[in-house]
Image: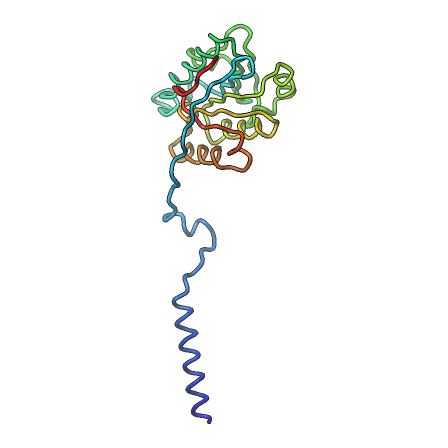
Length: 214
């Protein structure tokens, strides 16, 4: 009996050891999987038609010194798309709001995007919808949709989209007008706007040439 018991115990240990070796080691955090993570499929962009009377175009934090081919080529390449939307918005009488970082001035806005008479300029960090009184003043004007372009897709643009949605607005984000420091940051922001909780229902990803203002 003693020998038989030892044989059974030995087999059990062998099986257990084999199972332990066959079981994949779980990653402790995403850092352990970083090199193997694959990007999801890109989102489907949607055409958008905006009612100029019920929409506002928010142009976030563009600074000339940080938006040239030498300093940030991704930003410089986005300027014509932002300028096109700005011209369309003005032509239709849409409200336009320019924002600055808390340490920049209106004089630093690129010439193509310079505010004109009657356009508001505010300085506020991150979520631009958090500017005191802004959301209430927009609602008082009957505005329910926020078109957003900005020089930092993964910061001001994404946070302002979140802020708009949480305050009861729809957010429209053209992906060719939200440059970041690199493609990864833009990809992250686009994915989050398209898939984040609440955002996916109330935010729409589009492209500047897919936006019509009436």
